[in-house]
Length: 224
Image 1 (cartoon, rainbow, N blue to C red):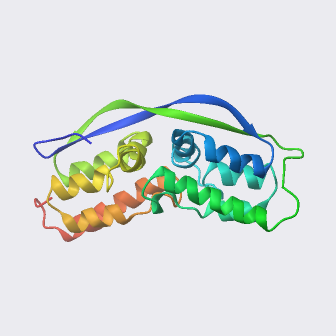
Image 2: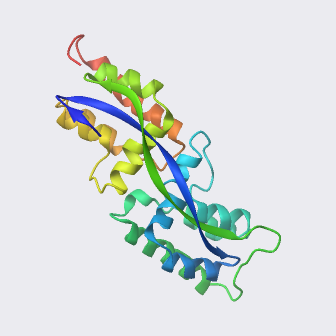
């Protein structure tokens, strides 16, 4: 977020991927590697999953759940991993611990370690997020709402996912600016309460726009 005299500058992003050279063919090896890979890899396979699938809503909203369900064909564990919400954890280490706990508990209930038979192994990656200027800068809520509708979808990711986790912000850039720059705490709370983990980035964009539209509909002309 870039706030100058109450302005908001939209920033997009791109992902620079790095292959770690670690792979798993069964769930036991998967959990072992989850324990040892860098936290950036946990981020890659959970949070930045949404950047890579920005337009499509998937049944399994992280790479771990997707692989377990589709490649190992273990739909029970796939469903359990799918409901792990990254935004419910204060940091990536806590998220890693929860993933390990879910898989360990599942493995304790089966006598055979589920593994890939005909599918592909799980390849661990990590990535760096690179900022990309968009040229969009706004100073009012109405202009902000218009920019939300037209900005490249990676900016939605950057200002919500990246801000809250890589930059350790307590809230996303949008709600922070609306609260601090525009002095609209009620709208800020509504923007902050939208769960970005439910659906695609385009669905998140729609939810943000709807919140702004509902607020603007209640405001007298010229106030926002």
